[in-house]
Amino acid sequence: MNIQNPIATMVDLVAMKSRQHAAWSSGDYSVVGTTLQIVGEELCEALDVRAGQKVLDVAAGNGNVSLAAARRWCDVVATDYVPALLDRADAERLDIEFCEADAEALPFANNAFDIVVSTFGVMFTPDQDQAAAEMLRVCRPGGKIGLANWTPAGFIGNLFKIIGAYMPPPAGAKSPALWGTRERIAQLFEPQAHQIVAEERNFVFRYRSPEHMLDVFRTTYGPLLKTFAALQPAMQTALHQDLVALIGRFNRSGSNAVVVPSAYLETVIVRR
Image 1 (cartoon, rainbow, N blue to C red):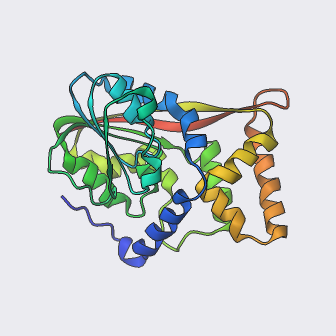
Image 2: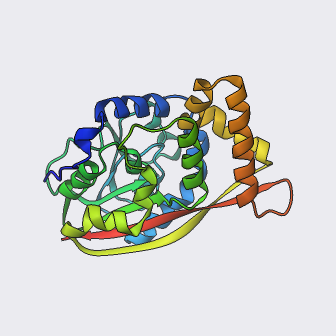
């Protein structure tokens, strides 16, 4: 199955993918990613995963859903196109197969998995339609696709907008945060779906202070690290100020500590 994206011909998808690969290969995403573990646990519960099911984690990052599914005795394959992100299960003595793979060209047979998942990963693919088509292709009929994607209006969605203001994406490129909308999910999956259930949830970021949070993100979160590195000092200062203001706008701690909820869309799709 190959759903063609009419905008894909207008965008240099190869250049976009190269740029993203460089961004996610920089820094140390696991420093931020490990804090998101609860999202993987909650997604597995929403999917009602069962022991022995075959689970594929697409664009797994540091494997939050992979770890959660493995703890539930599933047969798990975790994939990502940045191999450095696929190195996490040994400490917990969990049995997970790791595979370097492009979400837009998964190296698996049709209908190979009972469950196909992605948390804050597949949403960054340059060709969104192709990535969705691949997830549908490898999920068996009657199987489930589970997604957790940042919403446009949430904290991380606004972070994307600020990054885009300083480092504009290529003309015609679709925002990753579209995956956090029910409308886009319907466009991508509804033709092959028996059922789609989408619920907005919040992940709460917690740090010592706004400066602490920003320091962690700008030194470990690849897209932000790359953005700062590409700017002249005056623009770095402006970006810093915009991000501190963003944190302040979402912070609900009532103190210098950071308690920032960030909305994401949790989606469970039953494959037709």
